[in-house]
Image 1: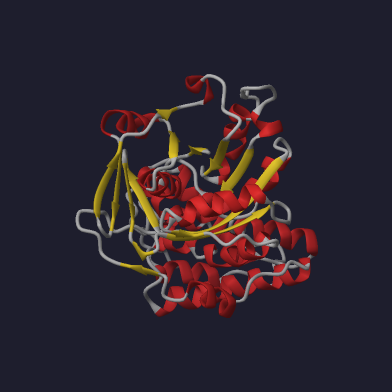
Image 2 (image 1 turned 90 degrees about the vertical axis):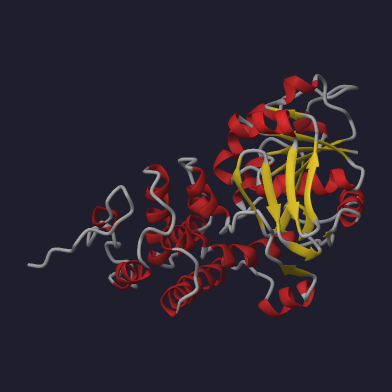
Length: 363
């Protein structure tokens, strides 16, 4: 099988690099400065054993490959907000022997959240979910770092919306030869919703920095409780913390990587790269959507969705809203969500473009 990594950033680059290291055929898909760097110097993957360089085919779309092969596996690793554009490009791509990618090829959605695979299923017949637990960083063109050892990551695989098949078992075997653990499960969404609850902290980290203080950890507990209440109301199960820990054990230990940037999560990385977009609409925003559908208020997640989105659009510095200020804004939220939070205060009016909090006027 040939793996076409659509979105060779942190997750895609780490998966693609490790698969190439294990002898699998890999094509990287990227754009802009990252694509130019991949073509010029290859993929530089920094891992605990050192910096590895892989000179792999790097393209910006299917046209550069001609007809796709019948044994191609598409791995969609773009951020969820970029999913529609990627599907529109790759879905109609012709496949040797007849048909198109969306009719004949498997598509694995290696993304945070749950929306990407929903979008994919509108176009692709064979969609697979991947619950990604892969600590990796991409903030510099051509370079990706993954600090986990002895395994690089844990990737639960399953058909979407449910089930397993032989394609997944072959993909799992390839991944497990490439320093991943890749369990094939019939209920991949249950693992993805568990990951989603953890990803609700991404927006906190993006706007106020690491959750290394009591204030932001307590705020995350409130945000997560809101998310759990919404999932219960929606009748959506998720893997428990105990079940996740039992699977993970001590298989992935993070170690400092010489010369590699100390990175935060995916949302923080988006702000560092100044992409102008962020995943919050599909992380905290997923809880907001489900809450509205099932009559459960989720105002804290709505606040974080708004703040993270504004930081991205205005290209504000990650972590530039002091934790105490973020907590103050959260404390002003109406728990019952009567009239929402936006009418009370606009958080970003109090932060100047350089990321400094303006002095609050008193009346």
